[in-house]
Image 1 (cartoon, rainbow, N blue to C red):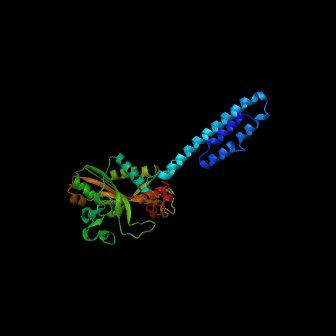
Image 2 (image 1 turned 30 degrees about the vertical axis):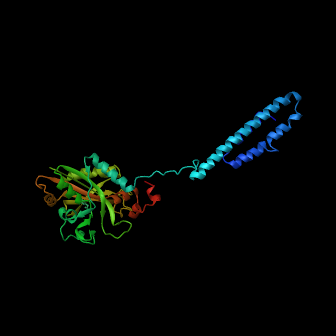
Image 3 (image 1 turned 45 degrees about the horizontal axis):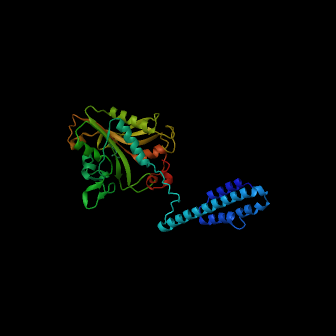
Length: 337
Ligand code: DAH
C-alpha cells in the first residue's frame, strides 16, 4: 500500500469534519483496532527485511500526525460547542438576507411629475392636510351654497366647524399666493380626502398634484404648452391632447384635459369607454376673484392653474384597474414597480 496515497485520503477525510461525532468516526476508521494504521503495521512482517525499518518509521509518523490532529480538532470543536451553549450563538449560522425594497408606485409618479415641472422652473410646495374652510372653499371662489361644501362631500373636523380635511390640493394656491408676490410657478403634491364609498375607482383618501403659475401676460396658450410637454413626458411623445370647456369656480375660462387613449391610440376600447379619449385633469385661467381674495392686482396679473389625481395617472400609465391595490400593501402588487 502506498503510504502517500493513504495520507492524502486521510487529509481529505479530516478536512470536512464539523462535529465531535464525525471526528470519533474518523478516529476509529484510522486508529481503531481494525483501522488503517493497524493494517499498515500488520503488513510490515511481509516486507523485505531492508524495507521494514523505513516503512515502520513512516507509519509511525503518520500515526503521530493523526493523533495530533485529532487532539487539536477535538479541542477546537469542544470550544465552539462551549460558545454555542453559553451565548446561544452559532457564529457559523447563515445570516438573514435583507430584501431590497422599491419605491411605491404613487411616490414614483409624484417624483416623476415633480421632476418634469421642476425642469420647467416650478418649485415644489406642500400644504397641511387639515385645512380651514376658508382656504379650501371661500378663498377659491367656491360659494357657500356649493354642493362640495356639504358634509356629504367633505370631512369636517368634529368640534372645529371651520376646519376640515382638504378635499383638493387647490387651497395651497391661496396659501402660496398670500405668502408670496408674483411671479410664481408652483407644484403641490399631496393627500386629499373625500367621504366617498370605496370601490374600484374611489377611495376616501387619494393624491393630487396641483400646479399654478402667476405673472404678467400669462395666456391660455402658456397653459396649453406646459400641459402638452407634461403629457408627452408622462405618456409618450405620440400622445394627443384636447381641451374640453368645463366649469370650476376658481378658474375662468376652465377646461378638462383629455389625452388620446394610451391603449387603443384613439380608436375606442373598453378602457376609454369607446371614446378614444381619457380625462386626466382640470385646469383654467385663475379667476380674478381668487386674486382678489389673496390681495393680487387682477388687472396686473394673470395666471393658470391645474389639478390632477395621481392614482388616476398611475392607473392609466401602468394599466391598473383597481385603485384599492395601491393601499392594500400586497407585496405581489407592489414588487412590480
Ligand atoms: N381642485 C379640482 C378638483 O379637485 C381640480 C382642479 C381643477 C384644480 C381645475 C385646478 C384647476 O387648479 O384649475 O377637482
